[in-house]
Length: 258
Image 1 (cartoon, rainbow, N blue to C red):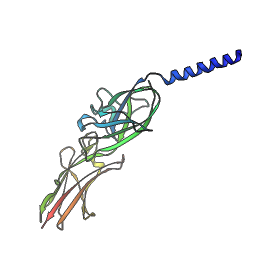
Image 2 (cartoon, rainbow, N blue to C red; image 1 turned 180 degrees about the horizontal axis):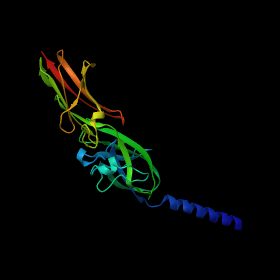
Image 3 (cartoon, rainbow, N blue to C red; image 1 turned 45 degrees about the vertical axis):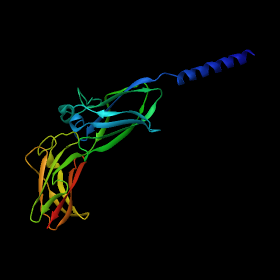
Image 4 (cartoon, one colour; image 1 turned 45 degrees about the horizontal axis):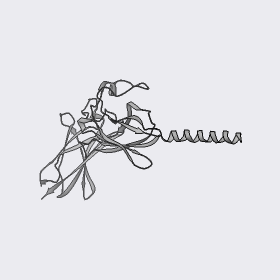
């Protein structure tokens, strides 16, 4: 009889501990998310920010959402100094999304970010997954999402612009890193190593390639094309940096009439 009582008490105590664990209060857990342009700096307010959503991987339930805002960070630290293991890359007002979640249990989360928001033609989505553990903050640099590519913005020809026979078609584009960092020959982001061309399509067929040259103004590049036949043309402004595998494209159309 005594043994049965002892066993019963152990069982009761065991179930009580399990119940206590299940009923624990949510624990504040801070999460920092940053977006970094590949081979460049942090993406922040100057490029319209980056939209972030944190969701439960299993159900898709939204845990937090907001925008990465702030500065592009310290150029010397990010681009010129060698980085030892454990070096924090973010300083001061470097752009981030900062949120505190109330977690009761470990959660596998999907963190998705889209940007830069002020350059929709170049905006991309990048994501990762991470276990979030109650009370175990992810601070400092936090979770850094890599944004490959260039923000390419065709300024000429304007969309659907009409040209008449004999006219040259000016091609002008602004090309910066995804963080807005400027490009130019011999600069920190050296456009001399980029392949930059306007690919000209007609009836979905590639008909010409026009090399783009530095205009003399930071981040601005020029080319000229003279169509041989009337019709509607599409321009793909293509940028490629083989050294770091960065790519960027913008597109527009123009009409060439008799």
